[in-house]
Length: 320
Ligand code: UT7
Image 1 (tube, rainbow, N blue to C red):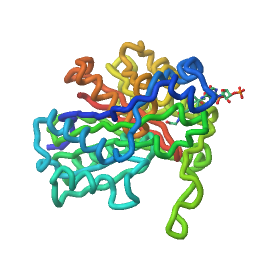
Image 2 (image 1 turned 60 degrees about the vertical axis):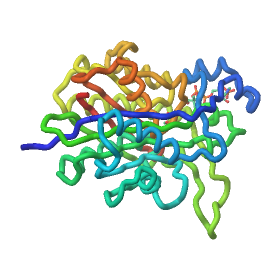
Image 3 (image 1 turned 45 degrees about the horizontal axis):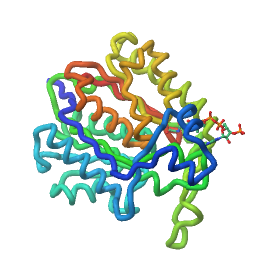
């Protein structure tokens, strides 16, 4: 009998400190009106000194494990998607494993920037379908505020910190119906932190740089294509999708994808206004929000899609 993977539980966590658009007006030459009109963002959460990516991941992970009705020692695979690991190594997944008191199971990070959670979930699905794992913890956790140039209004107003997690387990019926992953390094210069480690220290400023308008255009067309690819692979129509759970970069990108699906915005989970762009954490944060407030119910069909630096992009179609 075929083995599939299924979402058993979800959890998320946002740091307590909130930065509003008004707060940002004190830091850079911007306005609440510009940020809301161009991005849909009203506020974002940010970590304070001493608060780590692993701290956020642990809180989200514990909530997801609890909502799955499990205890941490039942997890046999940990995949963490992050662009902002606390250390170069060990991976955030290993740090999280230690916090959760789990020993021996594989644990590793995935770096696909804003598409990281989609990559991580697709990898966990493949481990489960291959029979290698029975119960995987998949986390997206980010402290992006630490790699922002707070003098660059083109980037610092867009991003936020947070974490989201799902537990996926082996099941006789799908769950995850299909996953679609892509990348094209030809676009590496449009969105990057162009620094690395040289001579034992960071070489230059470790801050994000983005050619926002160019990224925007490629994101809209690419996400339109991934929607078509996902529906076609499953022999589905646009009307078969109950919920779109998009990566939360910009309300205008989200609206364009919803239009492509002929989906009213009532069937799109939107958290960008309150969270900003939390990169790999944005989809699991949105998913957990809509499951906990009762919008998403068991048996419904969910399309998750993301686009990010690399460029990377991808989707997961799942029956919840
Ligand atoms: O997470 C995955 C990857 N990231 C994304 O998907 C982000 C994609 N890009 C975007 O969301 C949008 O391109 C932005 C929100 C970043 C920018 O919106 P835009 O409509 O593409 O604006 P723009 O970059 O073309 O800039 C328009 C104007 C410029 O002024 P001039 O040259 O017209 O005088 C900018 O200097 O807006 C100015 N501007 C700002 N003004 C006030 C740029 N940032 C700001 C700001 N406040 N924060």
